[in-house]
Image (cartoon, rainbow, N blue to C red; front, side):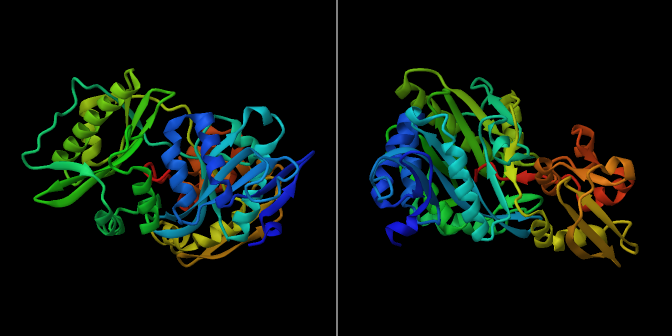
Length: 430
């Protein structure tokens, strides 16, 4: 790649949007540390050097800003590729993270410029879904809506939590020789709703972010063993500024394993608190219907989260075409299996026609929008709520009940079949 290939755009003054190369890595790491704290160093370094397809874009300032490593790093963020699965059907996409701006350059639209560039490159790569977690409301300005729920979060009380017992289950850090086991375990993971495929490259990046022996260990990945064999795992992340220690469940085959993963994580949390010199709030993401859920509900109480994960679906027709097998399966399993018909979904500025016959979807295509579907008994979904519809945050009728600009008109029965409420299990991935 030549220098010219890395330059994606020029903003006002001497600001340049470009792809970050190896010569920028140290500056990217230091900007993240300056803005978010030392806790970000290992994670950012792993994303920069992990070789898992992550692309960093930056805005640099100065007369040599268009040169790799040149200029002052003003802003940067990464696009992390994911292979999402919706009820086992692949949806190519990514997550944009580590959005970081030098305070001297804030208020100039640099984040918007980087997101625009990332979105163009995501479209070139055929991505149909981008997600991001972060500041409430902010990313709605950049084309995102609240697409799917953060799993319920439990505030853990140490007095009621299990204690370490190594008699039958031991817990240790993830090792290189665990990668094949974890990826193989993930292959048999339940795929109901929205999940992420965990590739060897993804797990290797997790390992690079949490190398044993780091002091303090801002991130860790714990493995539970029984009879010398790995049987379960758990990720942990510390946020120093917020004084929070998060537990992100992976897999626990039974309550005994879940108890010991939690108990060992809490020991590590206390060590981290001692290093930081202040207590940490212990927060565990729930995994409803699992042994882990039983453990954390015995050990804590619900703690509401402020908002859901953001999602963006830039090509609504393409996304529905990609998940046509899911939509057809829903039709075939419903009372509409012997029926035929069509529904027009207006996104107010554009529309989608979905037709079905004899238990399968027969057409998904662009259609003229209806700017006032209420007047015609039609369906209307605001563009920023379309991700929530497709990903099954509440189901079609649930979405219409909660949002003023979702209208199902005369077609609620069909929309509820095509777009039911679906779970998600992405907490350890994002």
